[in-house]
Length: 570
Image 1: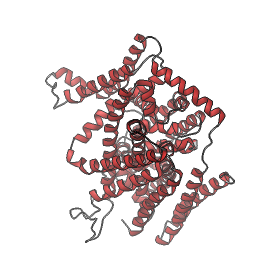
Image 2 (image 1 turned 120 degrees about the vertical axis):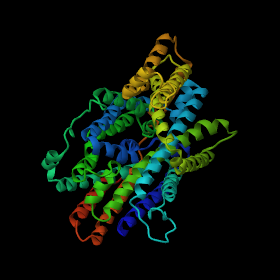
Image 3 (image 1 turned 90 degrees about the vertical axis):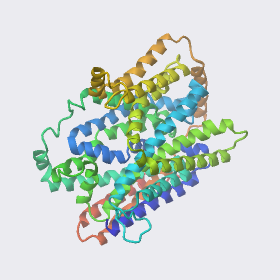
Image 4 (image 1 turned 180 degrees about the horizontal axis):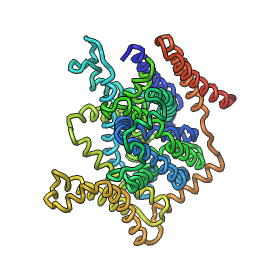
């Protein structure tokens, strides 16, 4: 990788850390750290939720699927948009209306302390390990593109590139640093900046890549047969897409990292608007950012599918912008990591530490929050460093997570609307769903303990996607429906929640909250700096001056527009 790309990448990473330190001045208490004081603009929340769906898997997994099967990958990702729009319509404003500061507070009030601990520890284990796997995957991709010279202490002598362990330590430490100091404000602001940079970079990659294959017509003519089919009957069927949308409706509606986005805005209307923005973006953006690996299939059909995305970018972008693209890839995973760190450190602070502490005040809670952020961050980095030794355990955890998400989240979402169900619903749905998931995962397949039941084993293996939807969506919904029918009277948790909601409604009417304008101004300044950096890269390139000029001009134009519309606001 040229020195200029290294400079851009390092500059971006240091700038991200500095941004977290700068935003630390907005964090004066635990509420600021974990919910941005309820003053985040709706568009910031929406863009942050959009970026929370990104990680290294966006480029590796979805990039490889797009490279292999084309438009099917786009259709699968469009289901995120459908799920987000449904969550915006039915769920987002309800979370804000309840007046809870964290999703864990809702669980405690609605279902009891036992359910809170069940949710907290089970979700934390699943999400921390899954996030560590994403950090590992990111480092694995980036180090392949980062050769270092002899004698460099960060160099892996076997590959000649940046050491994977040092990459995990460096990238993980930067995310932990800005999340610990800047709290949710840092998470939101870096997410918005990453969204703009990433999508603008892809906007330049697509036409340049199309030019290499003879334009849109050349791309269509040279594409493999069936490359533009919307479904694949052997695996990615219409039923699969419907199940994918249903699973992610529960995830976006009740996953704590997303719920945090509904709680950090001033009003119920803002919560709904932020989720609509998230959903609308996912209805058209997947085609944009999955086109590079699809086009690269024409350019280099024998390429490694998992590296197709970054290779496509590297083949067309000028010196300096490759470093920016690598920074954007880092930022996509950083968004996922920082979101999980912030939400779970918030749970540990507000819902585990505070009830146990003899006396707390805003300052002590803020210190505890930062301590838990560092603790979870260190744990995450350690797991990422060791995950390669686990071999297939990583895939095992991912598959169990797929089966566990809805059984864990469905009762929480159901409890927002149901007057009847209580903590029993959490335990029955969660534990039975977990048990069935383990049975399917360990019982069947080549090495399953029930593989001797050949007919049943063959059916389970053949209908894997159907079973995921059955156990992951239909089963928990059926159990909750049965519990709803058999339960009588209003649950006491519902009554407590209604009382809190009435109190919060009265407080809001007396002192309505407005969004903090500093968010837009911080984004504008960062974009102006990135725009100036693009103009400087003209000096490092013998060609592609028009691309760099256009990129820098667009960044500066967006920056100026934001400044114009926020002028006069404190």
